[in-house]
Image (cartoon, rainbow, N blue to C red):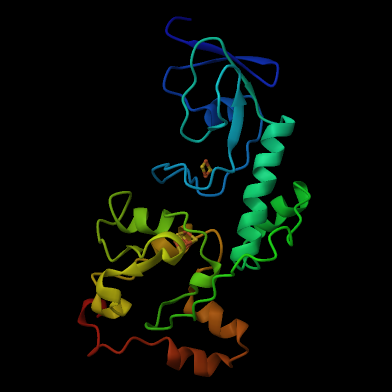
Length: 234
Ligand code: SF4
Ligand code: FES
């Protein structure tokens, strides 16, 4: 076959088309590389770094979700260095974010034998739940800043641009422009942001109210659109 790249991942020789990422090349032969920020239908930005792998000759670990294969590349997805890096990333996440609604990440904590108290001085992010519309709540104490919601709201899907990053450094958070309540933004309540959120930071309001123990009749009332307040949702 012409125009194919030959590489080795965990001692398995693989043939894939040019432009394939290490993640996809590994998946093609059944090798699982963990991901958090990556989503098959979103632009990959390599933000979380849980997918790092060791590439022979490379000085640093490389994120498999964006790094493309090259001829004769030799990749190790599970070396001691890789495992240590992933464990540290998970320990940092566990020390600052509420992961209680993120089952995939919770499973990784087990798999990588994470010490959730490794950084006892770390300041946990604890913003209050934002409940400003009838469709979904925003609980940024659970947000890992994966950027999926921002991307689907923008050019990955909806072209609505209702949400974006706000703040810098430790204060970085997903927000709306000028911190407006969701009904005052361009949001069309498509729900795509909720659908791609991996941590429960964005959650359907009905589900959230059920979890608070509210009776169904009250939930129906609380999740009704006030049409005069938001004419786009009629
Ligand atoms: S709200 Fe959810 S989807 Fe958006 S950045 Fe945070 S964790 Fe990711
Ligand atoms: S999954 Fe690759 S950097 Fe997040």
